[in-house]
Length: 325
Image 1 (cartoon, rainbow, N blue to C red):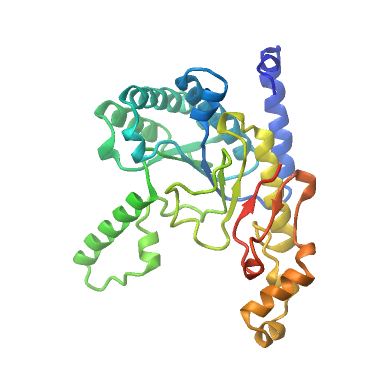
Image 2 (image 1 turned 45 degrees about the horizontal axis):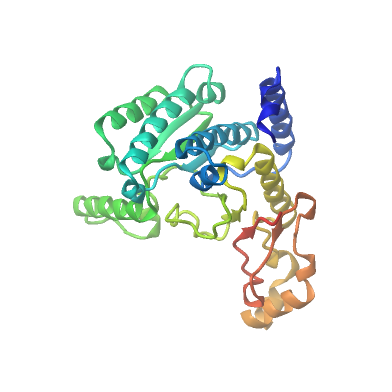
């Protein structure tokens, strides 16, 4: 939507009411409990629109606040956003310093009375390696977590600074420390899960990446492995990603979950009974599904999004959705 529209009197109130209506509709069906967001495209947006780089990042934070408001209105209990990679410290010092200042100001803003956290009862958690952060940033982030610690309605995880590999290393390190203290500790994947930054939170249901880039960029790699996690890619740059785009993705996920029992549209259990599964090997089963029932796979064409398998061998194990505009 053009920027001039947002300058009209009453625009913010109107958008807030629209989000409430959309949220009410969303809650009538299945709603993902935990959503991860890779907010990519701020730099490219700034370059494409010939504005300063910091303005692109600033607009990205505004988009984040608008999308988060819709998510919490819709009944999502946990959102995890990828705010800053550890590798981003390799960027120009001026950009890194500005991003640190921006993060401090914006996170303080949403945690203040009357803002997002206060309005929706959101507890803010900062996930990442604090050793990389300057002391002044650490103080502000810890103060934000302390201020919102008693909020219980929803959770906002801000990954800052973070990479999934660093999180896994942290989990292995702390698991080893516990194993040294308790020789009877049974170390398995569940033990490692309990030592991740996201321990105690709902499993990841939906992972969204913007900017048309088809990779996960070291974000929540451990959490998105289970087949129940749907992965959606959007061609929009993050500052262009609106609550309406998020609404379409939520409706698509809810449609697939309601009709097929799976957020990414997996249909094998619905269309194949167990005797047939036992009688056919995996390859033949996948080919059969692809040839005879692929046309019945959910496409949610009314939303403009499509769920697809990349090949016949993947037809019985769809784990990703591609956003097609």
